[in-house]
Length: 226
Image (cartoon, rainbow, N blue to C red; front, side, top):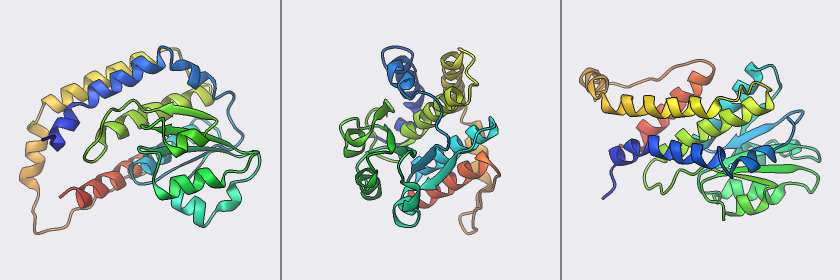
């Protein structure tokens, strides 16, 4: 039986699989993104939204406007954003959740949909002008590998669109894979944290900027997984 720890320990290899894909033949899909849109709209649900949130913030940090909105809000409350000329980057592990499929169906002919998904055969991918596979492999629990690969991929896209690429992005991501391995090998920090937790008290995660997205993701996992 696959456990949560099994999938966490698979993160470095999943990241290396993505690096190998986009540093090779998969790089053509990155190049197919073309120049930066005037106002890219990043969207997703759950963990995918948290990655989209960080992507939008990073592009803004580089000095360029970007929007981030949950897919359910985009479909139900902000459909005016789905107009001719819009570029929507939709992130979805399965590419088949209800709001994501509805978003793909509502995209006007004059808009551009870019899919980031772990399922290149999904309805989202089939509707997209460009599909960027996440290369995370099979997920059975909390999609931890998908989140890691998504963060790496949106970083690549934001660097490309923001004109910040230095030609060493894949080396940086390989260094990240090694750091994840080192972190997973050192259980002392996690052990100390577990010793301080009181199951009879609440736990609050806080942060600002991209760390707020991380805090929200941590609280979502802790609420969902136990």
